[in-house]
Length: 319
Image (tube, rainbow, N blue to C red):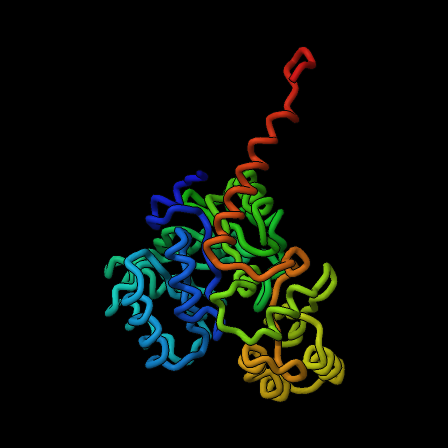
């Protein structure tokens, strides 16, 4: 078994977080991941507070294991969602797309572990000072909204800059990724794209099959002109968005076109949907139950780590 400081911090069996993806990570998936010994995370996204609260209560009713909730800082319901986390005593909160410093203290006072997602060393330092319990260092290989530094250089720089546990994310889909993350100094991993292709994930089969069929060059980033690039699988929607950006349309026009596209993907719309996925999609070849995915990821990581000493030679040249 692989056991790290993250396991102790979050009271989980395996140092594996399931990324909190809007409209994707609903209670069935969250419960399955947590019951398998990882940390399942509800993706609040822009969902209305009553739906978020419903999800939280459903998860609490179905598992006694720790779970989390992710909200983006641009949520129009941010204050209401934070209030739900405090009132319902959500064990872990992860945040994205901004600086959650103002919310860390009240969440921690309620007993919640706060783990912001960061894409830079500067923000990592700032959030450690603000009281974050751990950090997800997410590289640009990830799906959805991304930064411009990639996982391999980002993770060790964040590890070197802070003293709290760091979780590697972006481009990770198997045990080799977990082993590599540990070698970079991380205490665990977060996977998003890989967990979409599980039997418990409620997205339309079209979404899952697009990922399984994808290769190393199947994703594209759009939205650079908005300052918030998004990585998704190539399809008619991304091609149209790319064309619209080249036409120098206003931000309002681009935002209007992009609104609702992720929900369309979750519902299986191959033309209008934004099928957000990371570059790890080329590593995903099947659809598995969460328990089997986590078991396989840990077992494969252990196998990799046990193989590594053979590459170390003694001073005399023997191994």
